[in-house]
Image 1 (tube, rainbow over the protein chains, first blue to last red):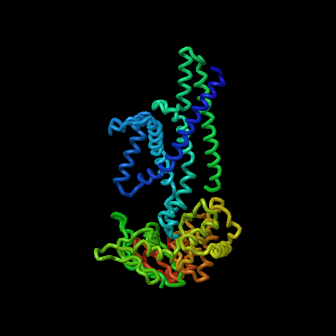
Image 2 (spheres, rainbow over the protein chains, first blue to last red):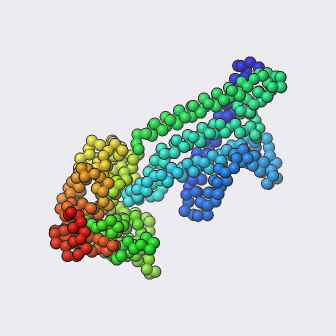
Image 3 (cartoon, rainbow over the protein chains, first blue to last red):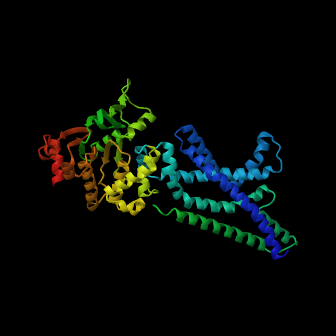
Length: 224
Length: 252
C-alpha cells in the first residue's frame, strides 16, 4: 500500500470522525443546558435525580456507557436491533455523556454570575425569563468558553471509541488500526505509519478547534 | 404620599433585623437613613424594594397595598403581575453599581424602558442621552462599564434607574465602594437631583452630605428607628443618647 493510498483511506475515515464529532456537538451543547436547568431546579426530587445521573455518567467509563446503550435495548427489552442501530447508539451514548459534562460547566458558569446582576434586573422589572436570556446567559457563555473548549478537544479524541461499537463505515481510528494490523500480517504497509498519520490528523483537528474557540473568546473580550 | 411602610418586621433565622419599623415618604422629600453597620438600614431598603420579603407589616406604594399581614400573622404580597406595576414606581441604586457589563452605557439605560415598559425606542434614546448629559457622561454612551471609573459607573447606574421615570429613588450606600475622590462626583449628582425635587431615600455613611441634602434624617440602630427629624436637629442637637454617641464617633 502506498503512502498516498493510506492517506486517502484515512481521510475517508476522517469524514466519519467529523460526522460523529459534529452530531455530538450539535446535540450535546444545548442538551447540556436543559440538564443544567434540571440540576439547578428548585424542585428537589428533579435536581436530585439529575445529580445522580450526572454522577453516574461522570463516574463510569464512556466506553462502558457506549456498550450499555448499544446492547441495552436487546438485553433489557429483548428488542431486535437492526444494523443501523450501532451508529445511533454511538451518537446517543456520546451525547448523553457529554451533556452531563457540559451541564456541570454551565452550572459553574451560571453560579459565578454575581447576585447583584439578578437584583438589578429584578428591580428594573425584568421577568425571570428575560433576566436569564438577556442578562445571565450571555455572560455565562463568555465564562464557559475555556472549559467548554477543553471538553470539545477531548471529544475529538474520544470519537476513536467508535472502535468498540464497530460502526460502519469505520471512522479514522478504526481504519488506522485495521491498516496497521493488516501490515503486520504481511499485507500492505508493514509499519506504524497509519497510526502516526491518524495522530497528525487528530492533532490538526484540535488545532482548528482551539483556534476557532480562541477567536470566539477574543470576540467576547470587549467586556469584562 | 408615595410610600407608607407600617410595622415592618424581619428576621433572618433567630436574628431579628427589623423590629416594628414604620416610615412614610412624601413627594419631593429627601430622606437619609443613617446608623451603624448591622442596624438594619440596608435590610429596610431591601424590604422596601422587595428584594427581601418582610415577615409582617404593610407596604403601600402610591395608595396601592403591595404587602400586608394576613390572617395568619404572616406577610402576604400582591400577585407577581400586579407587583410588577408597583415595581415600576421606584428605582434602586446599589452600592456595587450592578451595571450590565455586556451592554454599552446607552443600552444599560435603554433596555428596560424599551423591553419592560414597552416605550418607543426613539423617545427612550432621546431621554437616555439627556440623562447621560445631566450626569456629565454624554461622551460615554458607547463605552462599556468596565471602561469607566467607579464614580462614572455609579452615575450610569443612577441614570439607568432614572430612565424608568420612577416616583422615588432609593440609594443603598451609593458611595461606599468608591474612594473619597470619586465619592464627591456621585454626591454632587444626587444633590442636583434633590434640588430638582426628586423624591429620594438614601442609606449613607456620608454624614455631612446627609445633613446638607436631606429634608429628614432617620437614625436607626438595633432594628429600630431611634430618632428622626430635621437634619439640623438630629445632627446639631440630638435628643437620644445613642444618637449622640454614634455621631461623636463620626466627628472624631
